Length: 122
Image 1 (cartoon, helix red, strand yellow):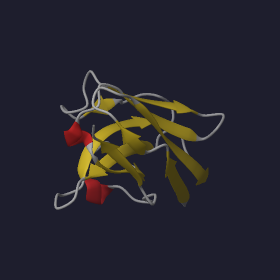
Image 2 (cartoon, rainbow, N blue to C red):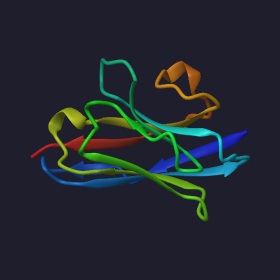
Image 3 (tube, rainbow, N blue to C red):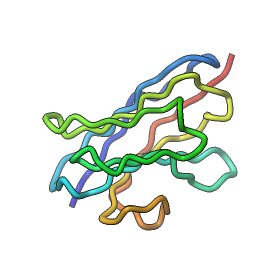
């Protein structure tokens, strides 16, 4: 079982940047998919980006393409989400989770972290 802990959220002005971290402990495998999701108040949890511990199969939601970058540091068992050019509509709680299959569907992920709040506001 994998345990995940997110960090790095905060308040940022529109156009600013944040880097979120997702630290993993427990059993991780190169083939496991690591995903970032977000959930805004009153909305469903939505997919943001995914990768694998081997660095392959990177994929972004349309809302994240060109602005967000997912990466990982295998020596630290940590996956990152670099978010640039942030917009107010990016405001949400951001979660990381893991999956054994290549998917963007939240219910096919498990070992969810507790989430980290990102607020984009002037």
